[in-house]
Image (cartoon, rainbow, N blue to C red; front, side):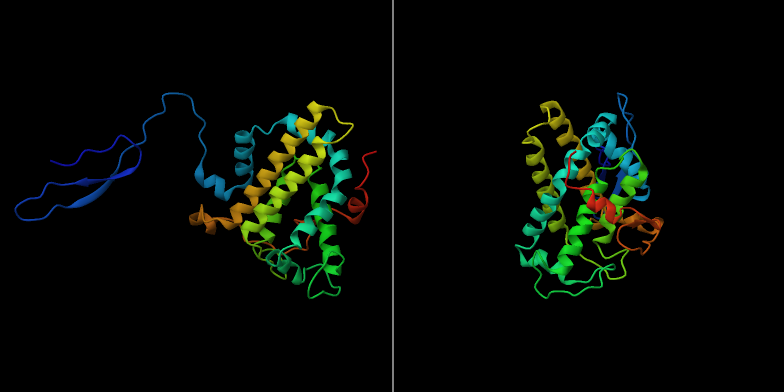
Length: 265
């Protein structure tokens, strides 16, 4: 008698009873997915790996990222910008505490032509240059997340850390990326919650909204590192080499953005 199929939507082996002329044979079969007994939103798995807009939409709905979060980010941007110079210094001080993270700054970037210190410190030319880009990136987080360009840039930031989209490839292992994002989030959270002039409900809204953005950024890093969806790799456009701070040939942030941080007035 043939084996019965499981009620679960997974492949299960069907084992035939042995016959006098042969041993037991094995085969596999898939049981059909039954209709859900309740309303449920369908997410196409392939789209998550081949269509950035669909991936962002899924993350937004899952995290309940809404117009309330956008309003909190825009209205709170002046407070975040005031924190950026201190946050940047704290982040690079942390990165330079470990040889394994400091190694990344011994590599020349596509936009830096100055001298390179063999053992970089906080005042090294390449570190000052990288601080400028981190300030610009954090300013970008204060822009309008209702525009797809916002998320495209965050995706490009992820891509550039796996050796793509740069004339001089940069490779940073994901463990350091995740740790750094967590450190940035923790630093911002403490600073926002201890702000002397913000009302509590605004602090909570800003911390929640910023946390969602950082976790979406974390996903947009992870998508370039993990193997999930690798079978669709050939269906996405190849990475385009551009200067840092550019997206689709357009400069995303300027030095004027860098000089605008540091004041909440």
